[in-house]
Length: 326
Image (cartoon, rainbow, N blue to C red; front, top):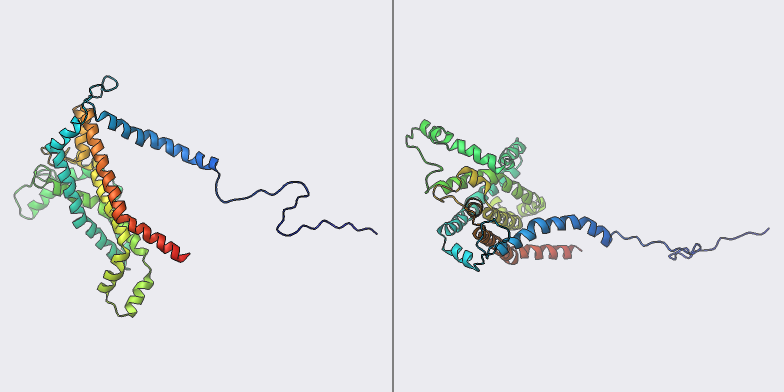
């Protein structure tokens, strides 16, 4: 009897009996797949971000009303020189700084304190979280209309409350130049503190409870644990929220425009409102473009410096932690 033995295949070597080698399988997508997914987003980014910025930078060197095709009245840096001499623009910068300072000193500490409180276990804390987050869900236009009713002269809730408390004097909440920005800041705090609170809660929940247990074993008090554990480990979250607050303040438009229109007498005007009025109401597209470039540069310079001197150490810390774990 003749037996036919099957050819042996050495382990680790491909079977070449059919003249085909097995394909290499890799978990990484190919260049074609990457291009397919990246191309749509890249095209939209070019069309709606890069090209408008370049066009605004070009128009900023012309005196142009937006009509008659391509701008031809070249004025060089005149629009930018006028910006630095414009009292409204300088006032916008002052109001921007005021909102940023008040946010850092009032709004963020309130959000942080509520987050620490709602992190504790007590009945109904989920309902409180939802209640505090609801204002952020409302659009800025709806929020502005709501508070126009609240601060309406004589008929609004604010004046009615003062009357019930025995205060006869009526306050011009949105018509007094001295207090209108503080009223707007109060509305902004009501609108956004829930969003910041959720971010602080997320940061607090990422801190392991074992650290607090170890601190308690070592005899640390609650205040000492808060100062030595909570605050340092919440640093990245705090720095990110500060960044979002500043950039959001630079872009502030909807709420203030619906609420006051920038009045009275430019007392509540922001950079975005000034740009809108110059471009779409006064048809000074060149000047408005220069203002938009100024807003872009303010945001860009702040983002670069903040990334370089503040956020960079968080990134380095993450890389060091990942290297230690590996």
